[in-house]
Image 1: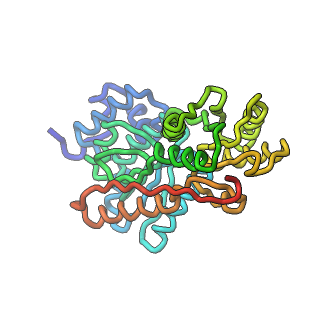
Image 2: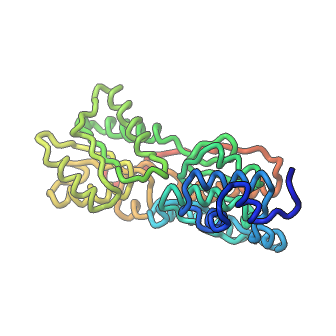
Image 3: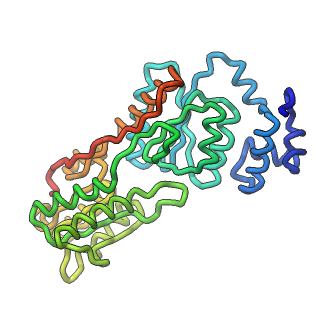
Length: 333
């Protein structure tokens, strides 16, 4: 039975840890093992402990904040998503708070702590997977949440179909007459993030096989997510005995590196080599990159709209929005 105003000492006793460990779970959870963290959180739930930060937040009537948990916040695609989020909140009374993720422990720490503090009115989580226990914690503590790029039936989501995107790129290049087509994707995505490159490659591979053009191992290059690494990897493809006449890059950023390598090799674009990217970053238009467009700014804006609709009416049903993809034809393919 929940006691009135339980203390941190009671949490420590119930979890059989020190009060210092309880404090770390609440304030620096990534420094605590997952097993200990779960024991403390279970004790908090069982006795109904309210951290002081939560009590203060409840006392501040005008506390209106939307949190965003995201990895890679300096990556161009994430900058555009965040821009959409910030734009959607611009004329509201909500403050935007960004929580950056650089490890699994930090992600799990945020998902453990933020529901308890009640310092947020709502939460947007971008491109990060998490489990049922953490999802239930968000729901039980009343944190309205919307997910971008991660399917979860309990929350509203904004997604794209990455497999379809890969198929679209393949069909486009096949229709242009290409038969030796290569793929480049990124490999350095950490375990705490989603991996859309796998689905884009799967869709691309399926479409080529259906056309009788199976991908050989040497036609698939996976390299860290940077223009320079992509440039070097592209030279490997272009130095093959039978180099590709077209390359599909699963990200625009890597496509920029491929384009540089092609120019260094003296190839004409798209006559000697066609290049198609994925994302339609702002820079893609200036460079003239043909790409599969996903609506990055719109994904952030729509996520906020879904969140605000639930905040205004918690009875509003969760919604799963799938944004369309399209080929933007420019000078490179």
